Image (tube, rainbow, N blue to C red; front, side, top):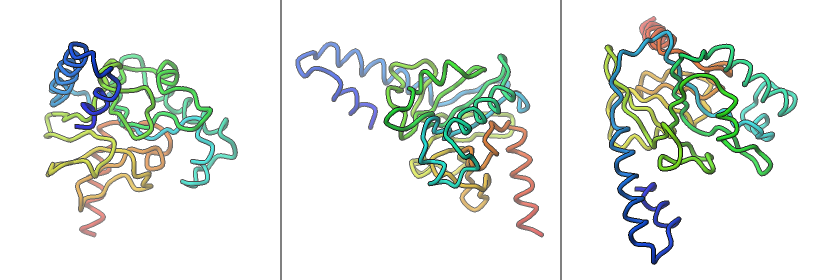
Length: 212
């Protein structure tokens, strides 16, 4: 697994006991991440991905509707904190910040409301399951309507046949019924988190559009 490899590279080759302890902690962390079962409130459980705070070029690359990186940062931060309350649960599915001069993902985490459960992305420097609370490589969320895989990159689904909620692709369309995938990257969510209830309605609308 990539996480094990990262731990091996980060450990001193002679510190066998430290490596063994780190690997044990990693396995325990991932094991806890396999399934989250709870009484999920669909109106107070949210998802978002791919903020790319401080990333000036993402405005051009993804045609984001901002003139400056400062405007982008301020808008996304305001949208987030207007949507998420202290008692909200928010699944952040990777890529908080990016760029040579960007502030760290952990700094941005400190600016955000709610109980944040973090799925590591492609550009989350310094964030990993072994050093960040409630951080995982992937999650299976179980609700009263079934299960969904939460992961940053949907191409890492590894044979999962159910619905996938993800980031990474920077799609502008949230729901893809053919591949049973839901992109919660900010380009698809109007630069703010979306609730589980909103996702369910979007899926229903997508199936209606297909049948029409």
